[in-house]
Image (cartoon, rainbow, N blue to C red; front, top):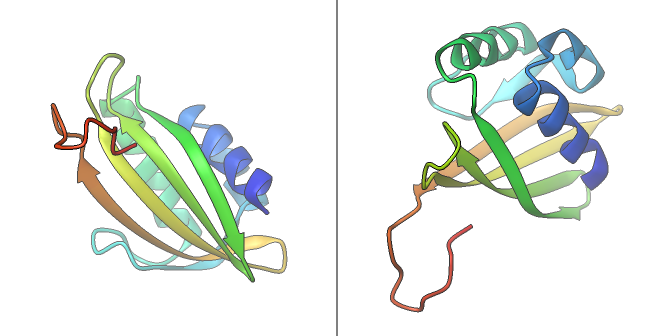
Length: 120
């Protein structure tokens, strides 16, 4: 399931091939991001609009983990090449071979950390 999520992020988000979203997302996707409505179509439209504004956006998946029907992806999101970016953790619930539910949390990448370790 982790490879499925990596493929989804690369294909739909990084390459902007939202016409492929039906391979990954349930039509009635349940969305827990407070800025997005439920459904595959609204998410694909959001991605298309975001990529028009930010054509260099990218999710660099750093690690994934799976437990039961959930897959967790920890990524560095950058709006443009060279940007410091945002650390993102997405949680996907998979059923019937499709993403049926999604949660995410984000944190801006700070210039420095007390430990010296990166956040993404």
